Image 1 (cartoon, rainbow, N blue to C red):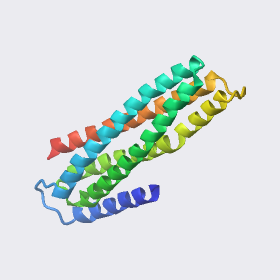
Image 2: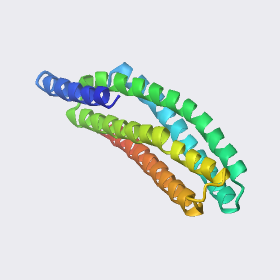
Image 3: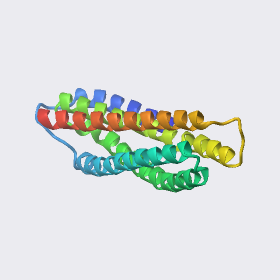
Length: 193
């Protein structure tokens, strides 16, 4: 997935450079870019809202763990893992929209707007990579640690869970920050048109 995204960025940069030599001075945004932009913004907003809800759930999991209610904490983690599948599907949708945006970037005029659009897509690509890491590698260690604690494995204490949850919350905040950067780039994009 990372290779595909990097290839798309390279293609759009090369296409943008080629277009630079043949463009005139008027503003233009291809319709497919504008449509994909709207859809990607909606999807990204839903994903970041889901991350905020996930962070709230992580706080509940943390409390359950601190209070020794490992069964309840396990149940909450399993619910979060179910939500991960939905988030992965949304991430794939976002990826498809970013591909559409990338393919249309070369048609954007003026060059300043095109560069801002490319920066925005790059930001959202970074979000996808971070989100992929968060969804695929964060919850499983937490679930496994809670399972071991639930079954009485004394190698794990509440600090293990608290550290995992702290790291997950930090990653979720970073993902939200990247999405804010994407939205700011698009606002800047709108200003130069």
